Length: 225
Image 1 (spheres, rainbow, N blue to C red):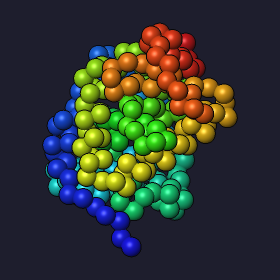
Image 2: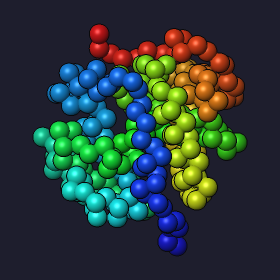
Image 3: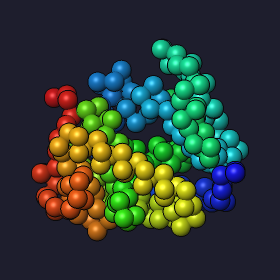
């Protein structure tokens, strides 16, 4: 059975999700420790995945992107493995690099990094959780308290729009959230959350009980001074 692919107004999605994540350029914090490239802009750290509808829009409007080949980095990667893990409704892309970035044509995966929508076990979209693989390399993850309210609101509105159109995408993030709970439970840690109500919380990965905390109580895992 083919995957359902809804029509998306990609330009509208981009326009409504364009607020800066922070009032400072956090890429200046991590880039000196990553060969001069912000972690979020380094396809050798994370290959951007885009919806097929996004690729249709991007290739018609910019030369910034091309399909990922696996040979863009100093250490080439066999694309077969990563491509096999990529959902049918998505494609892997590579950009021309941070020096050529066109902010109006950033993919949704660029705009949301390092966050993803957190979905509870009983299928509620609570807010923003982060990609835990980047805890020690992404400076923003250790400074969640300065994520702008506008960014948080736009993130939530954008994914509410997508989830209303696309049950499968909601399910994919529910699965990702479940993986996060298992990871944090194994480490006996609570999950930091930027709640949709504007607050900051720590979530028990076992019970999903929420504990509201001031932002300065959120974990700081940045491994560089």
